[in-house]
Length: 250
Image (cartoon, rainbow, N blue to C red; front, side, top):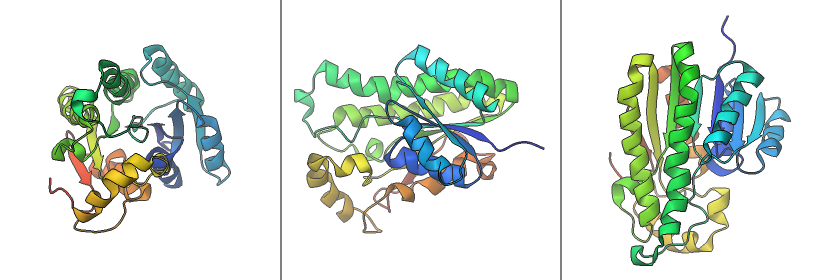
């Protein structure tokens, strides 16, 4: 009998990542919370609920650390069935016109949001090939379709996530590895709530643009992620599902 699936959730110590990790663990999966900080303490919070979870500190933009994360997961659980690429820079950003962005601003966002995602996908593929299957779920964003102003580096990075999702899907299909993306709208995650610039500048327009006119929380996203992780989406790959209350019809 196959044991419970093992899922790595990057950026899993708070906000959307922690909500996803908690939901997947509640569904009976074994979760590895991977994050720059607080990975172990967040895992312990799930363990206290009787859920199967462990934590690992990692900078996803560092190839060696990502390889070590995969090795740790295989040692701890003996398998990797799915990867949720949630790690990203957003909640700390200040809306800025593109002419005022520096090369360093651009590199910092792309190093985590795009390079980090690529490195994680690359690192899990040997385990997926050996298992003969796997699922990758990339967290992108609805801004990639709407082209929101004052966030050019973030918007471009999330557009790259969607394009990379499609490219990887075409390469990974022969190994029975599915690669999909979930694109949330403006979400009142823990980090976002602490950034008054985002709350003041983005929350109002986001609410006005939604068919379902209410705040979006991290819990609104977990069902879509679980769908792509699980067998219900066994014949779906290369797709992006927008979860934003009807702000963008994709």
